[in-house]
Length: 484
Image (spheres, one colour):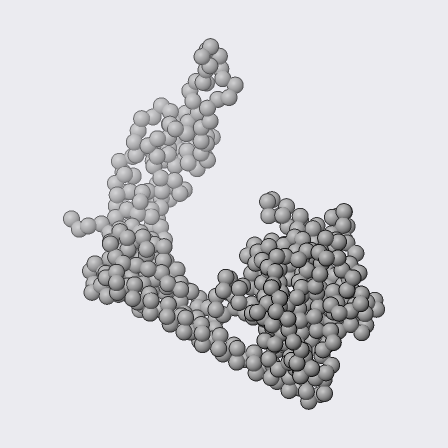
């Protein structure tokens, strides 16, 4: 007798059989009536004949639970035993209590025939579809087990690289057949985008060959990433050159306009959370509402996104009388001196920088309170965020403090009280088109970044709304939603 084909995977609909006014179906693993198969243990679903008693012989208050089944189940069990299927559940259960019948012999034979018929038809259609698949990936997606058997056990067994979502099952099948297998990050696309399947799997019979192929793919991924980074750096450089050229042509070199789009380089964040094709960005905006001027920015630092609100130039009289705890953040890091901003104006580049030992500790302002005592009410905008109409970054006032609020980009959790940390940005370069700064968060610690202006305009908005959306009240509302 020929071997009956495997049931899985199923690629055809259920077979149907009508007889004596009843409709049965089959998916190769038993006869079904209204999606129920024959159950030899219906007694486990029947109500107990007698109530459970305590040791004292009294009826227990809490009777042992038993799983209930729908009316269609009880009707199906009666049909399989050639019993009447009319009446309520209690009547059907009563019939089954006193019946020791197994499946009706005629239905048992029908079940055997339909099981075999289904499996043969399913296997034929499955083979037809399988043979029409042109790629190894398509076959691995459709049936990982069959692909491994045919390619490695029945075929030549050459080393293969698969771009498929079925990696977990393929790894399992490789283990079952003692094959070497390893996942590897795929190279980026030529345009810098991530491929739709960004992790590949390499499978082979020789472990060293698989390992070497994974190394080749990793090296290619690194080269691709470097090429894309070089192209992006060149694009940024060209945008910046065009911007500087336009600024000089319009005679605005001495009148800085720092508003617009900035490409930011933050080595620590890019190393820890970047994937080689993700940049940090900063959009700086100046808005005036009700006669009050504010300078603020929207930022995206890969792992954290949010808003900066600038306080004012550090040399301005109204910002010099600060307590010791909120002294200006100095930019004396050897890694990001102001001289690192290529093309600084002559007046600026001639200045000498003192060598000071940088402190990595967070600088928090104990007097700052952006929350108040009542978290249910909107907090008025702190006065320090309002600027004089003459306040703007310039050669005379390049250094500015700022506070920030935002959220981490994974689960979007608001970084509460982040605005208590005082950070700083120093503008420079031709027309104020370069910057260096420090950023301080619980997630990253105090880190450095540099920036290059690449766009003359940036989308505006309402800094007060952006600020309030990351308030204590917003944090609490989001926390409640996460747990409900």
